[in-house]
Amino acid sequence: MKYITHLLAAIIIMTTASLSHAQKKDGKVLRHVVLFKFKDSSSAEEVKKVEIAFAALKGKISLINDFEWGKNSSPEGLNQGLTHCFFATFASDKDRDAYLIHPDHKAFVEILKPHLDKVTVIDYWTEK
Image (cartoon, rainbow, N blue to C red; front, top):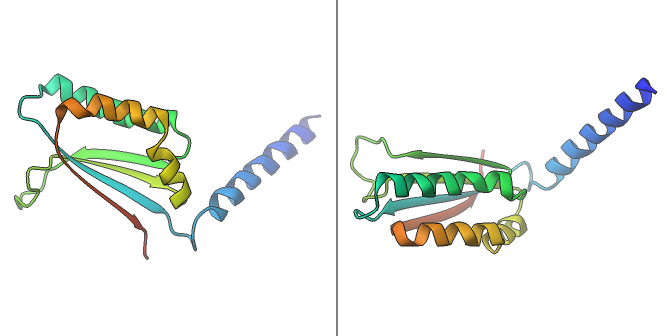
């Protein structure tokens, strides 16, 4: 019985890894880069609420393969007022497109709207 359980677990792991790899184009992944500038009138607590809500999407929307974010720390002064970078990874254009219309993403946008001054979005397929 123990052997069968371990064998089934190994099969599931191998299948999952195989499917995950198969969804990528030639080993590439789709990056969704979102840059925000918040309104000067938004408080630190309101901005924090947006940060938390965006980061929480990874746990709510299984189409997001990876997620990270951070605040600008460049000394170059070329950020044009953009202060936050959010970075989501998808396996396909189809997954990204479904994410954009997902109810949890739409709910996040409603949290964001009152505080958003400027946004830039760039999506790209990784190159090596």
